[in-house]
Length: 260
Image 1 (cartoon, rainbow, N blue to C red):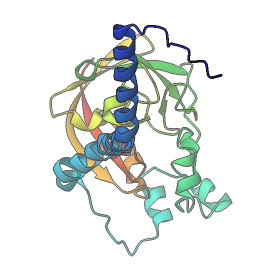
Image 2: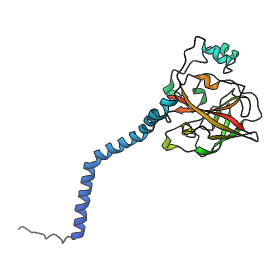
Image 3: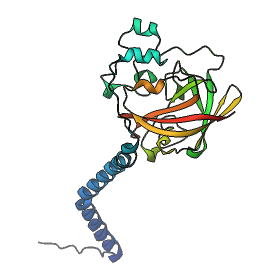
Image 4: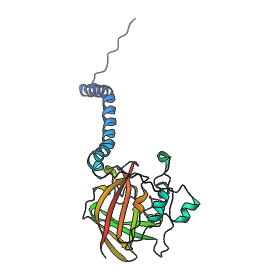
């Protein structure tokens, strides 16, 4: 004997919802490769566009070519006040560039150059730097430090703010869209946008020094004359990696002391 059971009545709204949900997931699965390609392309564009834009608009105008000199680099560095004779005698390779850039930790200032000079003794070990145009307010500068994730670093052996010579300060940069003026990992990302006349304010040992930007240029990592000390004037140099988010070259902001 065959028994037939009658199916219970189906709610039309529930069934319609189930059909629509199945149709939605089916379309989503079919569109998934397209969505992944679109997201991947968007990420690549968001990373590549700022670098390409910088290369095409800014880099070509400000890049400084290296000059081949018949005088040994060590002699030039010593005469310009970048290196002391003792540092060259103890380590003749102090001016050699790092051959392993890809694996270098650029959060450490010691990775930027293969040498350093001791800082002139001072009671002040920290001071602050502000750049109103970039919304940088009282960022900490560590004199002769090494870790760029802890603060900006004044390179060892360079003049203190307000003194004759060249105060050289290094800072991190990342892609512009990730810029945060309060994060030391990104704090110098936008310094290439500074223009002549923009102000940089330093508070050192209770005294406020106002510097005015007058130039921006790019150099290769092995062009160490950015550390040169000219004691006939009082200057400030800000240094970061460019294009922002890379370690290819160094972006250099030059400023002069205009007010105390």
